[in-house]
Image (cartoon, rainbow, N blue to C red; front, top):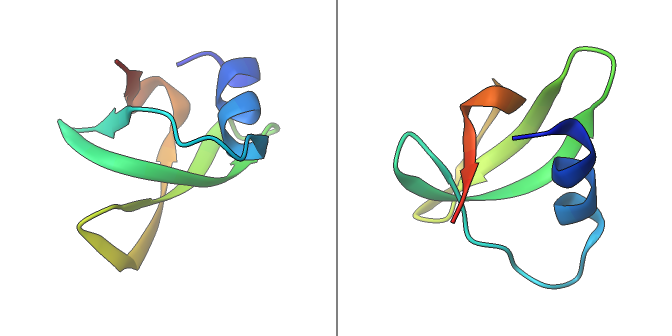
Length: 59
């Protein structure tokens, strides 16, 4: 996923259909410098993780 698109999704009040390793996720924050995103799986909101932006897919 492109950095700018990830930032748009993170700042939007509308939920986007984004997946990480095939699992639906929520993007909390984008670290522009490191090109990573702080996410959590919708099925496991207690498990936050930082992942590379290029591992995220919008459907």
